[in-house]
Image 1 (tube, rainbow, N blue to C red):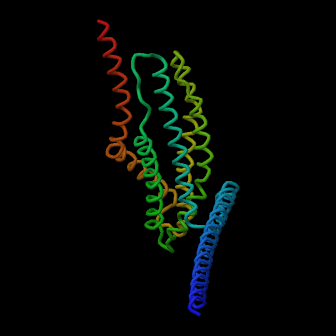
Image 2 (image 1 turned 180 degrees about the horizontal axis):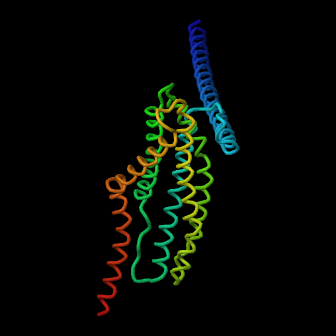
Image 3 (image 1 turned 30 degrees about the vertical axis):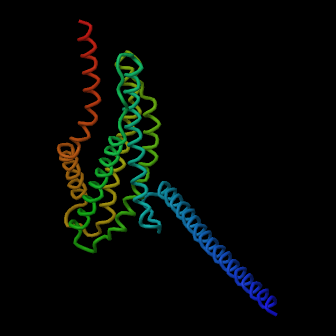
Length: 275
């Protein structure tokens, strides 16, 4: 009887352990299913957002003045992409120059631009875009005697009007690869900059026109002529860039000039050691 009781107790304990293990396995399976479902939902949302963004982007390229209902953050994505392509173009040209300088001699080596310098260029471009956005919005608010445009609506309009800069800056990045420093003729080097200069000018023009058109579209009852409002906004942006060059860009200019200084110093040391 005692042995039977012990056997029964052991069997009961084994059953309880088995049931507990099954519950834990079921709990882990349920947690894994929940995590998998959440991940799938996030992936689907990301795919849907990307699809909606590109649909809005294509629609803005076809008709920039036609307002399309979309997410408010799509404009910010476009601004970041535009700044990124322009940064890549600037970094490509700078590093090609430094690579050519290193390949042309074997006495010393000049390092390429540091990541911190690349980041500073990118941030400076974003700050420049903020000048356009802020000045344009303040002009729309102060220059209208009627209903004021909302910030979200204003940003969507500006984004649609300047999305062409994505194409232009992408071409600018490609054109930067055509710049050639490995020739001895100065005019040949200058000619290789031709497309980069043209595309950079077009990119700036797109933003200038975007500023003018967004003011014209957002100010329904202007205090003064929309032409004067746009002219004032362009002048203010130009002044902000002037002060930016005097204050903010000094650090970036120092970082870029340090490479040229190292280059000149090493050349001086080279020739000094020969005499």
